[in-house]
Image 1 (cartoon, rainbow, N blue to C red):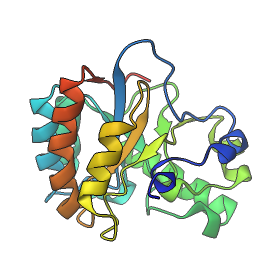
Image 2: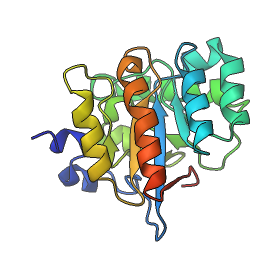
Image 3: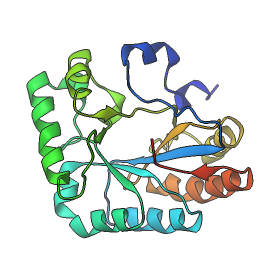
Length: 211
């Protein structure tokens, strides 16, 4: 019954041509991502856990938090992780006019400019909500990364054991998986991230961020 919410709806994927949902690989690789940080109470813990499993990930960060926590952003980079743009104010694209959304995204890009030097920087729309017009214009500059599987770590109504069961049984090589290094998600993240990394590593998976 809980299978569908964990997966990006396949029927929506054709609406985002060129977006990345999973990585075509012939090796046991997983692509972990963390949204909504950096968060001083959470992100350092995440970095410590990832280091135990030699995991390299992408943090899709909120621009205003980048400005408030530059040392934490530097710690993310020093640990070998990548950064992606998640707008400046964590905007819902469905509720934001086109020009306002583009302006906010570029404000985040400015905040990230000391840390990112990529020809096609990464972008993920908050909530996965982006209009066709926003998508069409942003993909000219950014590599837009959505996901194959969503951890639902932010939802207190999803039992932790259900999350663990799903992600132990349904992961496939190349999957892009979303977690959140936010205060809201932390009570569940701290219960699911270490055992999942342990399970996946024992199953032979490695964790990369080179998409």
